[in-house]
Length: 87
Figure (cartoon, one colour):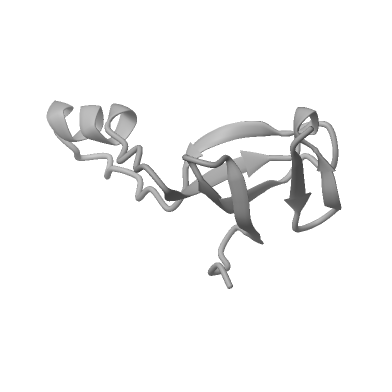
């Protein structure tokens, strides 16, 4: 079983978490064109290797946090609170 380290609760099994998409995405402004909104909603880098993601500890504290995960090995390199930078 994959263990994920919640920065608030500590290490827990993966079934307690839900994926929240790519981290550090800047929201499109309210005046954005249709093409800009489409890019904001649907276009992600989906990089191979180390990737910043947002996760939620759904069956625990309920908080969102960021993680750097290697998409090739599925290994979580680090987790950190929203607003913080990874170590």
